Image 1: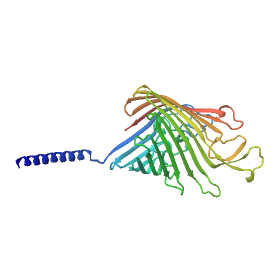
Image 2: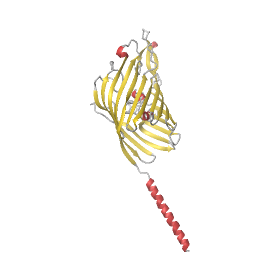
Image 3: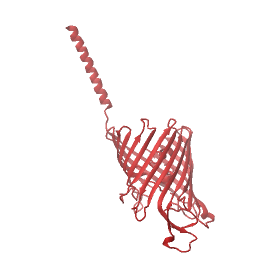
Image 4: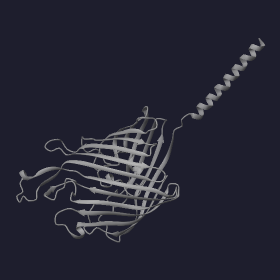
Length: 390
């Protein structure tokens, strides 16, 4: 009896110790809601070395005179991220960017992101609702490119797509490692970009991506569609296809981006040889912007000093013809542009970058009879850019 009692007590003690250990582990691994403040800033000192003689274009330094110089912010973000649970989180991010000024010329902030995310509502599938990054470039290609602090990616810079929109997204991975996946977003696409919805139509965004060879090769295929008017009497819509390919490694990262956008019924023209203007002679056509961008970055001293460069070619309307006289168009189809930037990236401490760089946008006018500087000219700036985040 004494032996049985001893064994029972020993088993009881073992169970009690095991139970206490299990409770301690549960307490240690129990999720605790938490949040953090986030922010980032792009700031420059820039000097305009040369101005386009015809003051053309819509890029950042277009129409700025030669010798103009300034200290300026290009982005100020201040946000908060909060995790309610292992599955639910939220982000609010206020932004001041570009031309966001009030009537008195003071900087104004707007909600760049304000969304809630439900992670793994089904395994490897997330739902996001609210004002969020679109999958045109902000989720993948912009991240791999790595130098949004220097300039927007080509479709963003040319105003062909938004970086943020209010809607409902589903983001999924086809394997646990996230080597393959998709992003689907249906959103307002209002005008202005961060205002309320202005019509009954929505924009659909979709991309499929794959990461191959131990994630060194990334391929992303993107498409979108938006309707802007009723189908009668004249349907006007836009659709884009874009391919992004990148090779990433420790010594070098190379990115290639190509796109084609169809703007249906956005041009009205007639043959330039027709001397009589009549409705019967007018043709309604499609404007088709297209372009490509290639960028490269590499370290000189790993973690401390790097070099980067990028070159773009942009055609605002590949259907433009000098045989036509245009009466209405959404683009300056005759004005082809190229963009070049290059510089150094010094990181004196984590998350602080000092980047001397050049910025140049060139114009090539294909209209008939254009000669001299109006035929070919450029905007050239020299900048010292600082980028910091927390």
